Amino acid sequence: MSKTSLRVVKSAIRDASSSVHVGHRLRKLREANSLSQESAAVRAGMTRNTLARHEAAEFPDMKLSTMFALMELYGVPSLDGLVGPYPSEELLHAWVRLGRPGLRGEVVS
Image 1: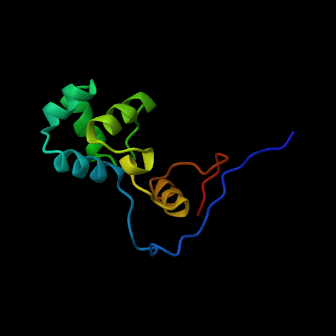
Image 2 (image 1 turned 135 degrees about the vertical axis):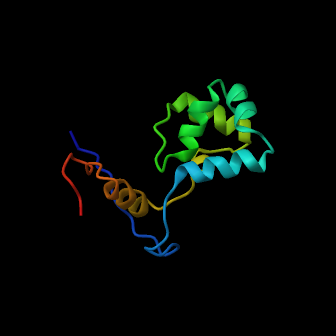
């Protein structure tokens, strides 16, 4: 039985100084659709406070069903369209910078 592991792929597209903030992207998508937080939240089946928390978080802790609801509401065809096509290396380093564990529970530097 083979083990599958997540592989970090370096990207030539972005430089190391670019930052990841999924919440900002969510807010920009909402604003591009001319929706208030209240209106977007009701249409996506959540409270305005929940949507505000997701938009403020660098890494929103959303259920997959919530992501699908926002994808449909904002008219984006993929999860990449919703959270951004960040290279895996950039996501990993941003995650670790927040003090989150690495892929196998250890702290990655």
